[in-house]
Length: 255
Image (cartoon, rainbow, N blue to C red; front, side):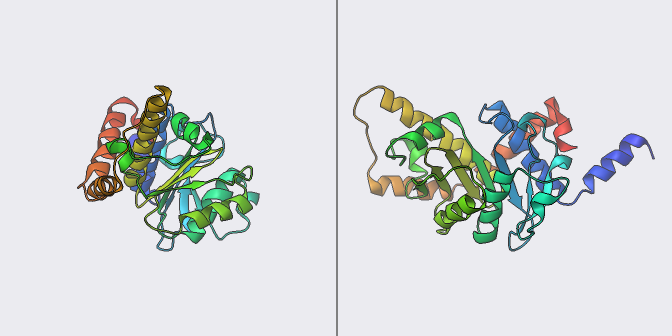
């Protein structure tokens, strides 16, 4: 067997290989969208039934370089996680560990400081109003945390996790901080993160005009949100297309 084929088989046999590939794609595409934060911010994906074991990016590695094999396998119930030689970032452990311990429906967790979502998080009222189709997706489906308490170490992570107990709420606008998005899969969560940032951008730029906003009625906003939730396969196709592009341009992400 050739060395190249042996290496390929070893990589393919990594635990949770397909999940790792999806997550690596999400990291690299987030960097392409300029929604990364130097070597900070974190994504995670639960890989067991109760969500206590999850994949997460290694400490201080740029999103544009992350490969499937780089991802750490973390146990949210292991108190010695931060003392190991391959320990994650302490704030990543504090925030993501708390959510995976306490919020079983949060299978995938994406946290970014993307520009427009963070601008929204900096406003006195950080609620996203339904002024277009994208923002209507999040009507009654996001929560605002107005009690920023510093870096997301364990105590702050536990507090944030309590805001996500309603399964209908998929986005937390972290006041004075950024945004956190949860979902069922990498595709579902990345797609939601992408559209929340687009919706926040539209809202912020609409505010720049200084003109009155045309806000949708609660009835129509809720209808649009439900229709998006029932729209078949859009998130999966979105991620599939991104992987197809990376397969052509930088296939090393699968390694």
